[in-house]
Structures are given as C-alpha cells and as structure tokens.
Amino acid sequence: MKVYMQSLGCSKNQVDSEMILGLCKEHNMSIVAYPNEADVIMVNTCAFIESAREEAINTILDLATYKDGSKKLVVCGCLSQRYKGQLESELPEVDRFISIDEYPMLTSIISSLYKGDFKNDIYISPLKRVYSTPEYMRYVKISDGCQNRCAFCAIPLIRGTLRSRTIEDIKEEVTNQVNEGAKEINLISQDTSKYGYDLYKRLAIVDLLKELCAIPGNFKIRMLYLYPDIVTDELIDFVKNNTKVMPYFDIPIQHSENQILKYMYRRGNKEYLLDLFSKIRREIPHAILRTTLIVGFPYETETDVDNMIEFIKEVKFDRLGAFTFSKEEDTKAMEYPDIISENEKALRFNKVMETQYYISTKLNSDKIGNTYEVMIEDYDAENFMYVGRSYAFAPDDIDGCIYVAAMEELKAGDIVNVKIVDADAYTLTGEQVK
Image (cartoon, rainbow, N blue to C red; front, side, top):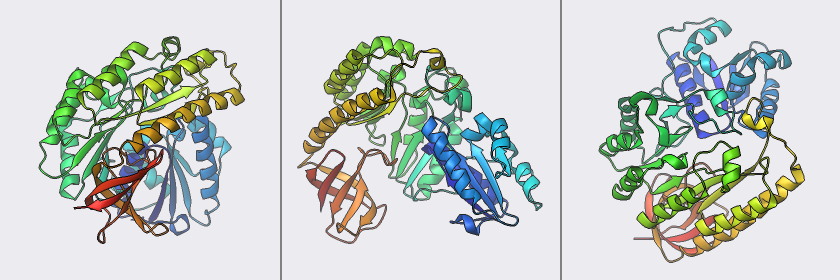
C-alpha cells in the first residue's frame, strides 16, 4: 500500500505528520511523493485562523481530484478535530476524517479503510518518525496543548490543555537525532516556556535544557514559542552561559498596550515586556528577539496602534510578524464588538510592518563586517550563491536567509564562516572566510 501526505500549518503539525508516516512505515506502507501514486491520500490540516481553514478546504478539494478506483482520501489534524461532524456531511469526497484525539487508534482506522496485515500493538510515536526535514535539522515537539486561555485563540479548544513529554523521552529522541547527524534541534510546542508544569508541578524547561546540553555531539538547540511572563531569569541565565543553546528568543506578545492585553486575557503588561526585552539584550547583547502582534483587535484605537509602533521602535525586534484579528468561534473575543473594518485593519497592519521594515533594515545593515557561522541549506543557481542560516535565522521560512559566496564547493549541512558584506531587511549577503 502506498501513502501520500500533505502537511499544512505549523512545524508542530509537521511533526504530527512525520509521526503518522512513521506509523504507516511500521505497517510496511510505502511513502510516495505524489498523490496520483498513492492508495491513501492524506492531508494534515490547520484550523488556527480563517485563512488556514480556507487553505485546508481548498487543499482537500484539490486532492479529491486524484481519487479514482480504490484510492482513499483521509483528512486529519486541527480541522478534523474541531469540525469533524460538520465536515463529514459537507465533504463527501473525504473517506475518513481523523481527529487528533483518534491518533492513538490510527492503526484500527487504517484497517477499516483497507484490509491488510495491520498490527494493533504499534502506536504513533515521536521516536518513530519519517522526517520531512533534512538530516542536519530536526523539530522536537516537547509538549502539546496549552494552559493559557487567550481571548482570541482557539488552540486550547483544538489541542486541549498542556500535556508534556517526559525529559527522558525527549532526551532519547534528541540523542537519536544527533547520532543520525542532526546539527540543529528546534524545540517546539504551543507554550515552550511552560514545559513540564503538568508533569513536574514546576517550570521545567531549564531542567530539560540541562539534560539535552549533556548529550555528546556538535549540535545547537533553539527554542520557539515562549510565553513572555514565564521567560524567567533562570532561563535567560542558562542561555547566556551555555553555548549549545542558541540565543534566540521567540516571544509572541500579541500587543503592547495594557488595556488591549487585558481584553486579550494576556498576562503581564507593557512595563513588564519592556523590562524583559531590555534584560535579555543587557544579559545577551547578541540575542535575537522575535515576536508576533495582532492588529485590529476589538477595542483597539488608532492611539493604541501609534503607541504600539513607538513600543516597536523602542525594543527594536530583530524579527516581527503581524496578523489582522479574525474572530474565532467559542473564544472569548467572539463576545467583543468587531467594529474595526477589514480595510482599517489592513491599514494598521501596513503601518506596523512598515515600521518593522526600517528597523530590520537598520539591524541587518549593522551586521555588515561581522563574521558568523552559517549552515548551508541550498544553492541559488540564478545568483551563483549558496543559501544558509546562522543562529539568528529560524528554519520556518519566516526569518529570511544568508546568501554566501563560497570559496569551495559546499553541500547542505556544511557549516562555514561567512563575513557579511551586504544586507537588506530580510537577507544578508556574505563571503566565505577561513
């Protein structure tokens, strides 16, 4: 039997897709690169915001065109988890919707679609994945679900409350990955800073990092998705003093203004955020700060946006992304008046991103003349240059990249020293040096 998987949404979903394919492989199913080659066509969906749901539906309909004869179309992930009952009647093209809650029963579900020799004692596992990332880079999902209840966010409604993996389980996974050649480990979850609170009744991210840093090998660790009010002094100090952990702080704050933060049900306030980012920059001057913001949230005024822009100018984030607010059913924000027009939301979004464009351009220009370790990922034949990333660039296609004029032939996964000679808002250009 042959299976094709298309994974939508975030890197956390990508890990789920890799685990599902790992289970398929355990049952001697072949993984194919094209849907027309498959017996089972699968799509792992995202349902975080309206645009993600639209992409998921369009993808499902597109994949349905490949169905003929005995081919089966299976939809899993967040869209199935939240809207399974509704979608079963609206999308008869789909043979089976699999909710996230059903992942432990995947073997019997596959058996119901195809009669075959399926072993019911084999379960989905992060230790048995078919990786979609190159061998030098891996994502490691350390927990699932979230204990926060932000007014705008449907993730807890989809993924449930926090469920952390044990330190021992994660360490085994990372050890295997490093032994297989991984040089970059990216720790991900809905709330990485809250890791372990459900298991150990304390914030255990530093305990986890200590164990991972003790693994022999030449590799680096990056943390993504930190909640600001639990980025502790202990965590900052650990990053400062451990070279295996990249000084990269991905801290989505959603807004800067206290009143809006209260409406969002976000903990902390503007003064705390300014102090936190100042502390990180003071303790680790070369640290990278990344955040996301929501514009057009109910009750937001033009003054709030102007103040947020001044906040952005003061902090000078290395990376900043923004979303325009969209109502998500069953969230607290559904009760709020949505009187800001889509046109006004777009104008506010553009103001924020224009501000960040100039900040990013200046910060990147300041790097000209500096030399960084760069991991090579690709070759741009049009520009005759290699493409890579330093610690300052996450692998999720958000941060940009570094173009490298090489002294020698390189391959993906090579790490070389690069002196920066040019820059724009999203990319750096450099020359390989010895």
